[in-house]
Length: 423
Ligand code: EPU
Image (tube, rainbow, N blue to C red; front, side, top):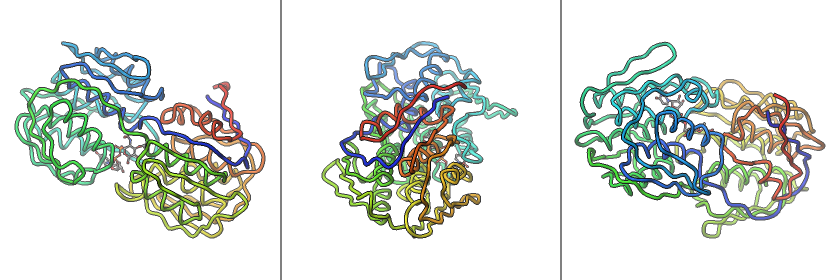
């Protein structure tokens, strides 16, 4: 259990660069299993989910190690398709091992993937796509087993909704499958483009990047490559939200502002001064001037407002003048952080996918608990706007996605410290 202590009302100043994105790095690590040459993923932060991924890779027999800031893999002859239950259950991204292990070993058994409890998170699209490519799918209560007799084959497959995870799974599988695969209704998030660029650098033949139709001519062996995963657009939005809550002036550099453009437009609407210059964004807010509320946000698939930033936006809107509403189309339980917001003195009600925010709250310090990764970050941000001291108990969610969020905010001037507490 990590205990984070925050004393609010300290303006932020300085410059920050987001590290490599969790949601790029984790699937890329799984994709290295497909490569017949060594791979190097550059400047990967020490996230808890990265540590879990390294343990999972080692458990299935892969050769992976840290080399300085990078992660290095070397191909091995034999892999095992059994994913240990404790590793599968520790993160959602264990699902990314279905396709590579099926392709490499002909067999994979995945106990139910874990991750944030954001509502039901089925894997039916992953499985339907793999089945259409020739995989045999067996579901038991707590695990899914996939087998293939021969090689997977190309397919024309329409995803019933643009799932990020299923698009990544089917891209990896299509690279190994014989013949052409066309994926229709694919997700278009920047992390999909990052996977496509990685696979192309390894020799994969993929067209349609950035569109909902991806065409893969599979079956050619993949070499290894060196690749720097995309900067984390959700971390960038987190720093931007922190500035909006605390006031001050910061620069976020090294992350294309377009990849979190919807969040920056939202902040500009609330009254934060947002100036873009190349791959930097300067954000400024006078802490004495109240933010404007009245926001109506709908979180949805790219390029709409990102679901991971919905709790961050909520944290900003708690004190803004006027009622706001946020609706999340992707996850049924995105706003578990509402109880923590209320403990900090906010007027807000979560009803299913909808969060209603009264606005105009005078927040005060309290003892709160991180319910999930982004909800935990959102509570930290709300605490930056609160009078007095907040203690945020985090059973481990925040470090799954941010190597050291309290330390980063501290480096910008926040009064924020982290310590390990009793479990
Ligand atoms: N869905 C299905 N069936 C499937 C797959 C998805 O019904 O087979 C549904 C989900 O239940 C959900 C919706 O489709 O309602 C969207 O899910 P998607 O598959 O797009 O999301 P994901 O791959 O599970 C990734 C990120 C999430 C991020 C979402 C949306 C990773 C490890 N996770 O999840 O990130 O919110 O895409 O952009 O890449 C986080 O970082 O905290 C996080 C939750």
